[in-house]
Image (tube, rainbow, N blue to C red; front, top):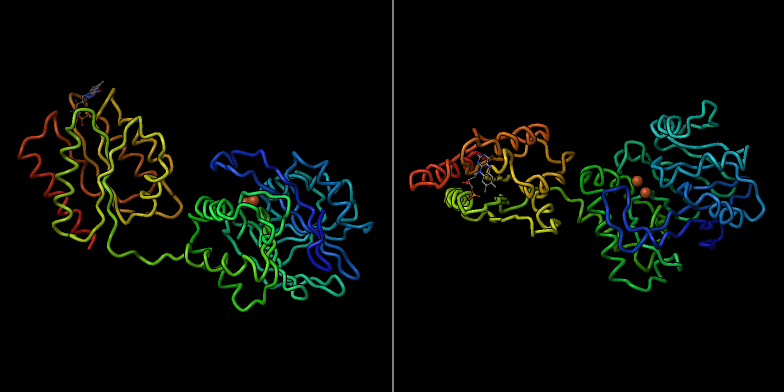
Length: 401
Ligand SMILES: Cc1cc2nc3c(=O)[nH]c(=O)nc-3n(C[C@H](O)[C@H](O)[C@H](O)COP(=O)(O)O)c2cc1C
Ligand SMILES: [Fe+2]
Ligand SMILES: [Fe+2]
């Protein structure tokens, strides 16, 4: 437990050993599940709970933060189990507790806790709840990063309980940003968290940040990682989020060509396609990105794929399918944020040629916009095949103008 201001107490849990979060994210620096107690003159609220793995130790931290008071409210900013997992336990420990949350989160909670009689008080965006000398204002911010997400503002403390926003998987016992021992690691964790959790929701981040405009802030209390304070890292985190969330089209266009090639046949087609594209878009970033089983680390290719304006995929057919590096690449395609992204397919084959057809089906599922039919060459491309590949590249580039 740690006191953060006159009326705000930290009762989160440190999990320095966590190395993977939600299956999707590597977490080199562990994480913390932050929970807070706000002690008003009349009522006491808990903001966010904890992961169910830590229910027992969380209860102790919470008891210390409550300082002998019985909590009246549990504000649920978000129902993802890293924050809601301990709620069932809390309700048993404190039968008088009322859960304060928005309608979408309430719907989720009913399916997470599986109890028909949840003591719920549903609030709306802009709603307010008094704790006596302090009050809670609710800022509903859907898709940051779940449809249920909201933030809670305490004007008397100029404190924002920001949920996952401005959070990161990082844990140090000092809790406050003024006590971070490894600032470069913290900065990296903040960026990685944004990319992984909020990257697919940039337009919603912009909307959420707009709702915060004009709010005086001394403290931002996120649900993971250090508490941000004015004069230390708070202004920087706000500015970084604003920059990272920007969604304006980039100039010049980015049109990467990802391919694999065992004997250089698909590679020749890739180079011809590129020549056709840069004829029309000489300034475009049209990288040839060769992938193979040794590539191992796909982070850069994934980032390029998800931030590009259009892309091409080339694969030979090996054992009746596209090769694993291409599937690996597509496994991280950002299906939330990239609908109708233009793409084209090509590849060399020997006798059955399923690679491009199979990739085409996957791209359709991902709602990409496939340009023309896949460009296939039987074994080694001829000069004529390469001219036709370049011509296709040219048509593809024109369609992007
Ligand atoms: C191990 C292996 C398995 C293959 N399996 C198929 C196949 O199932 N169907 C097919 O059309 N071609 C198959 N091929 C032929 C390749 O698709 C063909 O050689 C192609 O030109 C290779 O292109 P690349 O040089 O870009 O790798 C296979 C080739 C290898 C080496
Ligand atoms: Fe979350
Ligand atoms: Fe979270």
